[in-house]
Every structure is written in structure tokens, then in C-alpha cells.
Image (cartoon, rainbow, N blue to C red; front, side, top):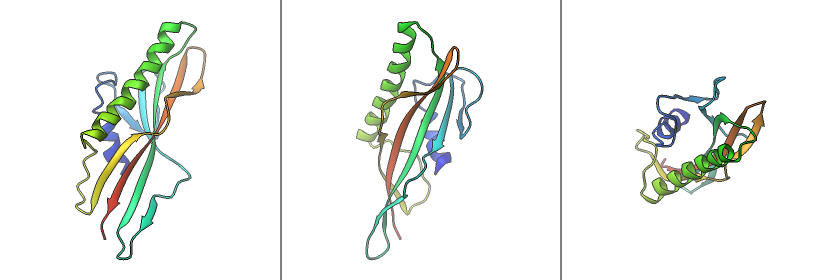
Length: 140
């Protein structure tokens, strides 16, 4: 599932052009991105009598961006995550989801569950993080 979500996130028009979206790895440079599977959640929300499942895939999107005392820079970082969240919301509304080739999986929704927030910092960079969720139905 993570590879399909990574490919989907890589199509976001607000990401820096020519910058790869990694999985579980954030390169040591500014304007880097990574998709990481969430932890501590049950992927199966419920199961019906014949074995169909309502499922979730929780993931985190990280971005390493410049961070400093300049208000405009830090506002730009916040605006980036607002645009990213709105992109997910619009895609959800228009049913534009990651492409899963398994005919037994039907994606129902995708979206952000938190705002973008600073996760870690050093002298002039910060890792910003936003938590997301994709819900889907798996037919038996």
C-alpha cells in the first residue's frame, strides 16, 4: 500500500519540482519529502459476516524545509501544508485516489487528520509533519 500512496503523493502539484518522494527516509537536504506508514493503529476497522473488511491506512507525510526567524518563510511553510491538505480534500471530493490494481480493494476516502506541524528542528531547517488517512474496503 505504501508504494501506491507514495506514487500518489508524488503527483501533488505543490511539491518541489524534480524532488523525489521517499518512503521511510528523509534525505539530508532542504525541500525533501517522505511518506511513512503510521504506527499503533489497527488497519481493519470492521469486518462483516462474509469477511469483507472496512480498512484504514494511516500515513505521515514529512517535508524538510527552511526554518528561521523570518516570519514570511515560516508562513510559506504553513501555507505549503494548507495547500497540501486542500489538495487531498479536493481529490477526495472528486474521488481521485491512489491507483490500486487489486480489484478487491476499493478506496473510499483520503485526507489529512492533522495540520502540518514542526516535528524536529536544527539551526536552519525543520521537519514538518502532517498525518493522513486513507480508508478503503477490501472484498473477500
